[in-house]
Image 1 (tube, rainbow, N blue to C red):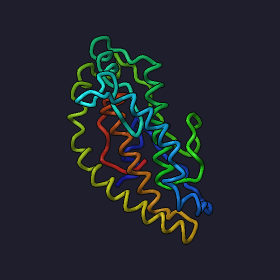
Image 2: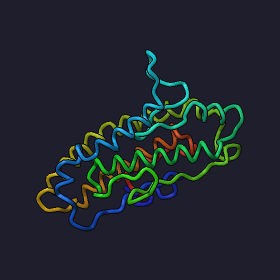
Image 3: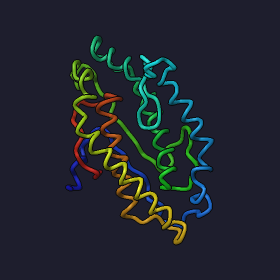
Image 4: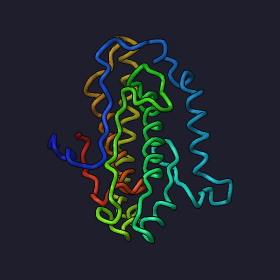
Length: 214
């Protein structure tokens, strides 16, 4: 794939490679160590799910391990052609937090996920001018248009799980995260974030590239 395949996409994502020996103990017990932050993330995610029979709250939808404002954003773009800045900031920050937790679970660093600091996980959106940059009707169908990406991502997620499992053994024996595996897992997360930015946080109308590259 071309190194510039997604270079100008308005959703950017990267994780700093830990070019050092990682902590074998916290790596070995990462699932246990991560329980407190997973509980916190679960509470935030539950804000996007109701206890109704459908289990889907009318105001929010879970994305990237967190819970973002979705339906209100759709309605605001469709009827007012506005994307309130505080909604945008909330969606960005909750998605950043979810990604820090996911990167930690993927063994991509030893630093415990912060609720507010960027740390080694970098996610950014370009704030859109809704009246100029966003088609008012596309939010109604973006989730459907992204179906080809969902299919590819399911396959990539399985591959990423296997890759992290291999990395787990590599870190336990060598203390290092194999760079090729790291780049692949980072690429899968980047792909997912681009799709989420297009279909759920609705920050762009530009269709996500089919690419793992930055």
